Length: 74
Image (cartoon, rainbow, N blue to C red; front, side):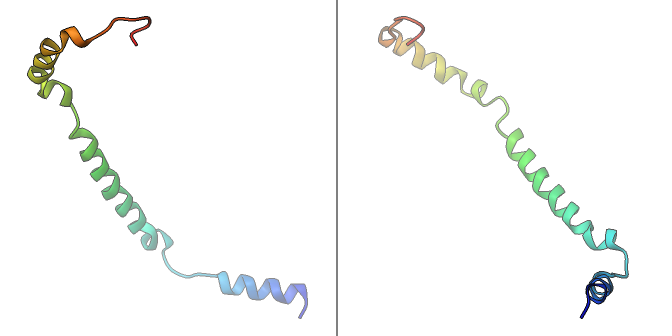
């Protein structure tokens, strides 16, 4: 078997008929669904710090004497 024969067989075997775009469209759909789900998770954490501002203020008042101001905020 010569190199030319190997190349011909390789080219003939990789030849594919059909619409490749329609066969691979599912990868895009799955990626879109996954990224949409991740975006929803990310958006669910919006404004979380402000939801419990009253708890943070109450904690800061209760522990105001525990905070030591030494150096660069350590």
